[in-house]
Length: 524
Image 1 (spheres, rainbow, N blue to C red):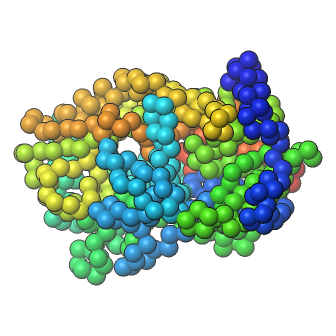
Image 2: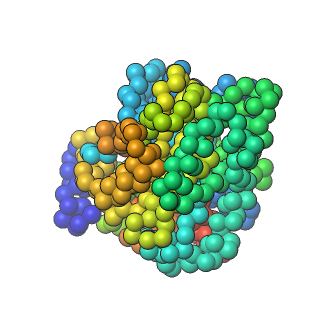
Image 3: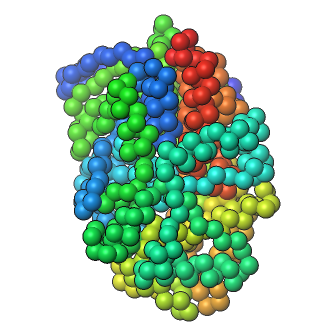
């Protein structure tokens, strides 16, 4: 942020909060719960793609790591009932009472529970944030796309060296997640008619059609067809986790491998409230260990030589901006909070009187259309199932792509929070182009509803602590020895016309290679 604005924010925050550094909790808080102190070599905040990659690669280099995750573990297996169903929503969907808006539909409030989704309100755009061991990989559809070189270099720093990443880091992610496309036998089955209708529409419109690589063992879906497993994939009831298993999310891939080294401890239900730099230069993390209803059971003051911020784009940015505003970390780069993008997300319902999509619908994603020839207009459109409800002749289409629209987080001293400010027309040009594509794919007589225009939100937030302005390419915060950002906040507002998961993980793979080579043994 500009220097004048920065000084004003710091002054206002000091008056409002009376805080200049993170220390012991207040006397009132001390009377309620005990305070414990811990010291660790490396603390990673967050257990999604960035946190999972970081924990595993540092552990393999011999470094002990503590991973703090605010949510709970979600163990799965054949016939499990761990995850909620969107047709029967309950408190497992919602992070401590946050009421998520799903595809434009407002859900009723739930009891407080450390559930899967927090809807973080902003001015002009809300952010959908995941919680739980495995982060966003628990609830994402699973589309795992590697960008094209031209689009990558047009939207991300060329110094990342796409060709090396394509040779080393993207394949490493693909191997860890065990990517596979849906088998033709499954696609030909009854509930995958919407996937076949989408393919026909794409080809009729003259667009390219591809199977989408997914971190899924599709044998689980085939076993559902035979009745061996109850439906989860084949009825589309997998938007909030796959109960049967077979989805290679971060918790069962990167984190499981990290814990198997014996050097990584994953601490669920550890909610980080503040970060700070101690007078000796080390990093302090203020943590509430919470019950599943959010009750604080214990407060911890954790000190570490190195701190990796991987709490997700919104929470990483918020924690750092709060620390800057209250003087808990001084002289953070002025670009902090800026350069935020939505990845151009658009979510549509597609209702057709020419196609009989049927119900239930198989999922999560089979086909997509990748229009990447022009880096300035590059975009992707996919078809995804809707939950197993009555046959409404409706399915879902999702688009995202390259957009120059950018927002910024602004610190509010009164609420001690950083709030996203997003221009109403930030993705307008991309949205028009995606809408044209969706209209051609849906065909004449179809009814399309752009739910993102009704309730602006994104599941793919990027930026806020971007490489170049806040961090170097390896996630080192500029001027702050031992402080790193390795999640979606590091990407400068876009992921090159792909959903971000694979690029976040590949960038973290690249970064940890450099950190192991240069920082382990000195900084870490």
